[in-house]
Image (cartoon, rainbow, N blue to C red; front, side, top):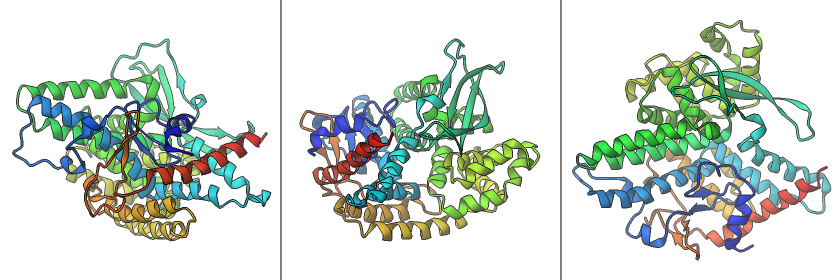
Length: 448
């Protein structure tokens, strides 16, 4: 199928459609689209421009030019990194690859197609699981608390798969919206954290009064984003940490959220097992009996390797004032992890072993695009998950993206000769991977 069909095949999966309106990543084909940008917009700008010399000053025109391109590119490429270069991302590639591996002559293997189809639907949970009270005024700030529910199966039965819900409340405890803490919550929080990092860096190189004006506008923009009841599944991670730490500076919250998401998206299986065994730490923190319903639901979610549950657990166990500095946050993070039997070093060791195993499995894929993405994803993983838990996009292998012009002109965001995805064939990759999507969609329709 030609690449010009991307808009149609991508539109059937609205994983990030409510928030990514200027650009998008297709989670089936891993194609990055920068829909709001034309080739004229991106001339002379690349990933290297994310590194700015300390004494550089931008005039307002240059600032706007860079902001338009670099913020959007950083956001969408972070989605790509998370979807290919984290443990969650490498498993994501495995799901896609399994569709190609199905023996068409063996009907007993067809369940792999439905399994992948259902997995893709679970990245962002259906709207049914979000409840919005449109009759209530939504004055700021909101309060929040956590409750747990369960997912319904495709045949309408109650399953044993828990959901973590973030409930957003008015000051007098009336529910504004109940939103799931899903995988898409983590993915969007990760990308927003990188976007905010790049935006703040650009603002830092303005002169006054532009610097003060742009800082205020960014703050207003971010507050409008996180207090929009229609998209709370995407902003839930920000709300949760900000409320737990009573922190009003979204820039400070964003840096910590990015690190937490990185840890959770790279959490190996052993991390969930260890956290489950040490669930009493959560019971003690929340002053609950260890056998209470609430504790049992969180424990069950961890047993099912629910990454939203792990994010909540690590966040709620952080000491107060954890965000007062970056150094203090890292030490506070170690305290939180230690309480459930983990540490950053333990997570890293487990993640590296699991990543290597996933890479080895994907390296034998029959699809060239999967092999290339897995190889570069594994190398990216080793740079994304270092000891200090922060990374720069310019050191990673990144494929071309597509401009939003009628010709879908490729944009080589990373021009470095060291970029091993520099010549990644978007047409071939789309053709290979969209066939996996079409097979899964076709069989899922047959399941009645």
